[in-house]
Image 1 (cartoon, rainbow, N blue to C red):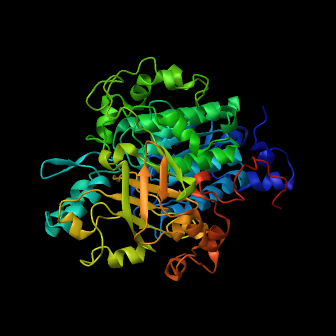
Image 2 (cartoon, helix red, strand yellow):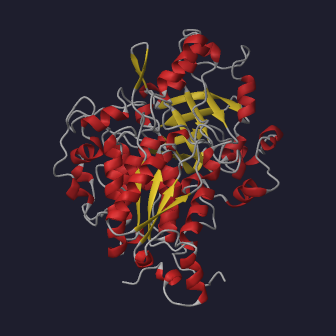
Image 3 (spheres, helix red, strand yellow):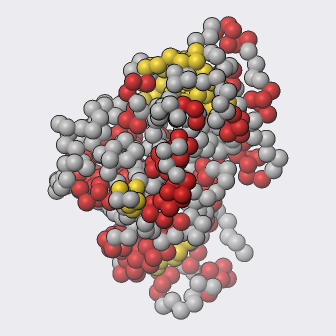
Length: 569
């Protein structure tokens, strides 16, 4: 098989000379006849969860060399969930587009994708799917468990919990501040079942990670060992022409949905899997998440839905042990980067700690997964994570208290005069892909202070934005169409009654259809929508799709392959 990179390096004309000469700095003469393996590295000091990936890249490099390939580190766009404003999701599609274009434009035969923080693995997989070169993911891994006052801390989840206790007056600001250095104990991404952990594990279930690797702690030397092996595998994948389109099928996504439910994973995986599927031309819909995942038991007892943390999951047997318990629900035809079916890697995957990974007969939640809601408030769908919600609120009627923007919420939420009680439904709009822009993690709105002081710790909340995978609560999110795209959420008024029935998969505002149709959005609502004048934000707002299809850009759905038709000189 002729290597793709030979289109640059083979021959004796001027262009081949240029391509070779500028890359010849110290490499042997036969280097241009070997597989050229890019290491797409999202390491950045401003993405603290990915800062260690340069060390991981060195191990990948050694593995590529050992297998006879040429490793080439390629820095790509890095999105630090905790740092970038207004939200990292605004740039997921940009990172995917930039990575895709760089992989296509360069003399590369295959790629190892290094990601960790929330949007990095999704953007890398979207890029790999669209360029369709042999590709394999190495997740950066979760941080080690930190403790504060003798108690383990779950990063993200305990930020929400402790900050609410400060607002309620049950924890001092001084103690809250002291917990900072305890929470982030080591390198790595969040150690709860947040989006980073979820996407690493789901990427393995999808078939894009060497089975058994995802969830290995970032500080564990076995991560470097596995990275070395992945470098070798990348060279093998090029020889076998094992591209994403050859093994990522509807069956792969079905297995990813089963895994998402069994681990109690983040709702953010829904928009990311939909976007990845859209790049491959796989017909994946919101209904597939409910149909395939809603009956799957939650087996992983991990924050935010349970008690333990990612270091415990790895110790207890990891994802393969979880999948072994639901093997009968997996599609046995789905392949992985190894060329073998996922299910073939489950034969020797015991559970070592049944407290952390529950046996199928003793699940944490009998029916987990993501519930997809529809109704006159969400004609194109909305989602809720029942395992993270309060059971008594899964069927609820309450009076809407509406906030037109995140600024409006911050200004009024803690006003002692706010007309709200524990039965109210908090509605936050203008936070969808177009409206914010970028669909931020603000849907799990704080509880009004006066209710916190009364002991209230959960309420029904409805939003067209997302929530952190580390968060919890009875939150209806990803409402589509969003308010800024003409969705009914823009028409809800304070005082309207909203009914939620998760069992019936309904979310409705109890307003007659003709009255709702006659309403127009308040000026305050419209004023809260994003209206950028230039740059990426302008392009994004003009072209972003809705959450129910993955919030990709309309012109990025699908793929262009790896062919480049013209020379550079």
